[in-house]
Length: 228
Image (cartoon, rainbow, N blue to C red; front, side):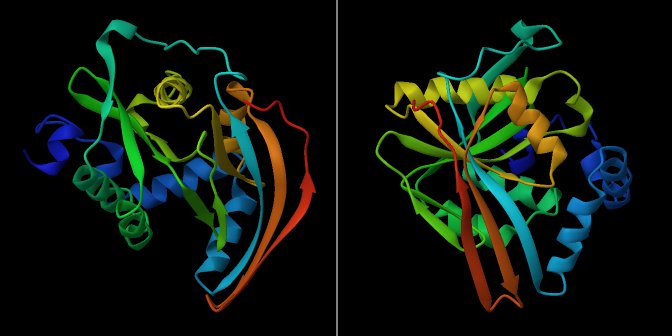
């Protein structure tokens, strides 16, 4: 089966497939108040990184099960093959070099399918995670959640919070009761998503990097959280 067969039927097209998708992203980020976030991402092209971010705590002990704005019976949770994830990264213009490192690590990819079409996916990492050079070891009962993505054609149905919650349940069945994730300080869309799940800030960090050679991570604040 071809890699993209897990994503869609052969005669389907998505906004992500368009050659003009980057222009669409610019318009979308302006509309959602992500101008400063986009500007800081632009600085990365010049080797300059100024990035405050939170390490957040998530999990069943914090969230209520979200509902889908669609016929829930048409959806199912399932694994996404690693080869498919790599193809998805390429289509979304994400950094495949970073992903290849993750593919060799202990992680699981899970997707939300509407019948046979992949509508959203995320990665769940074990043992450790790293963000902008800040590598953090995970306890036996912890997992790191990253790269949550809902395809443009399926947004507005609350699919991402629903998939995230189902991920919590899968992790709990495997003994992972505490979930961690990164929320960048100026990414308002990510903050709204985390708010729907009652995620709590655990730590506030600041990353400063220069020309991919010098990098600093400073912990600015620690919060009291409800441990899972």
